[in-house]
Length: 185
Image 1 (cartoon, rainbow, N blue to C red):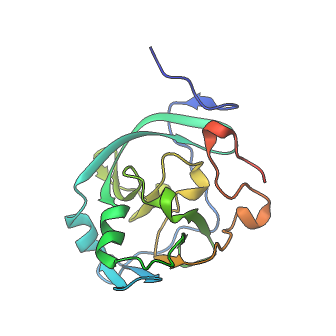
Image 2 (cartoon, helix red, strand yellow):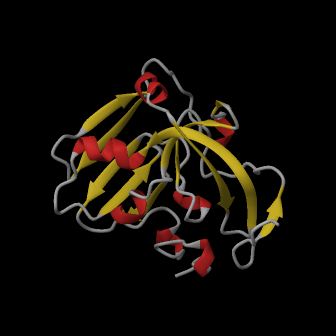
């Protein structure tokens, strides 16, 4: 038996392509992910490093706040909790802001970001993550609406205070839990 969908969701077979802004041009040899802020050891990771450490595979449903869900997507990547653990968040670290280096960002409580299924995803469905779905790197946060799963991820900032992201600044709920129907604030 198939598990139920969150309130107000309808099932789609494939993930549609929606994004804010245009997909970036990516030079994979120069591409980096910067992780800064309330950390003892800020880091800059290359795409090659992240692909080499993409050893975690999860199967997760994806829920968009505009009412669609896709079941059973297979993501592969590095567990965000492992990457942040190596960077050693300070006691003052309470929030995470993920951004694409252009105009899009999203915020998460650090506790939510450290859940074991939150990935720095480099693959979808057994192949390199396509640019239309956020490649070469996407933050994947299965327990939150899709706007928290930042495409074309270029940076993570760990902060002591919450900084609302793109959709939160436009009236969307700060947490975005689909099971609690947290679409709008």
